[in-house]
Length: 118
Image (cartoon, rainbow, N blue to C red):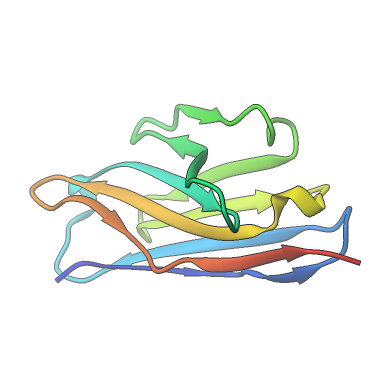
């Protein structure tokens, strides 16, 4: 069984930084992991794509986070990261990791809360 677990969320002041991690574990080989992405969902809003990265390390970002967030992956560890800098109150949300695994489909983690507040 494949598990997706996020970590690294918390409370940070505006202008601060956080680094989220997403570890994929279980009966899985690295070669089956394709695209990986971060989504977020703020209270009362729909879940939205924050950033995504392909198995070939091509990336794309939501306009609202470009220049502030950086997505990366460690294929050896099957781990996804999101470095978040210059955080704003509007970045407050639950952040979810999404991983596409061949023969498993699209998998979601349970989310990690990020709160940006003074």
